[in-house]
Length: 188
Image (cartoon, rainbow, N blue to C red; front, top):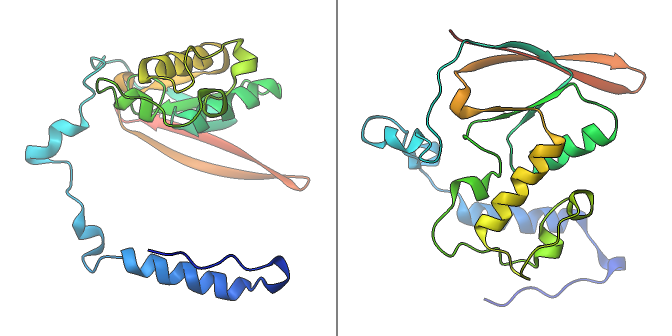
């Protein structure tokens, strides 16, 4: 399928670009909308289980933190590292899995490998003092690096230890910034 030629900067039309993207989006929309997805219950409920970490029961936690980071993938790990670098230690990564790494935690099939140069793809290499062993790192090395980042940058609540949690986000005006307070209470 040929692509349309790129316009010169002087001929840029933001409305035409929006229309183009809208047309592409509409090609992908399905009439059944959310009904196309299968709810993970009954015969599909086992897909909610974490095959890599046993569930550990514990008492509910009641925490108040300045920042709650939802998810322990690259974005959550880098955000946490930058918070710590900025002197903010009152944060918590809330991760549904039994470990850090996001995609690299869940996808561990044999031979899984990154298709982007590791020196570009892996975050915080200089901060951790780590250099990838291959140009295109394999999954286990990437997962190990995620845990390396988590070891120096993160306060983490993992899913294998978690029960359902409820949260409210409070915005507090502070000059022109907002500080997000996150309070979560797990059901007992």
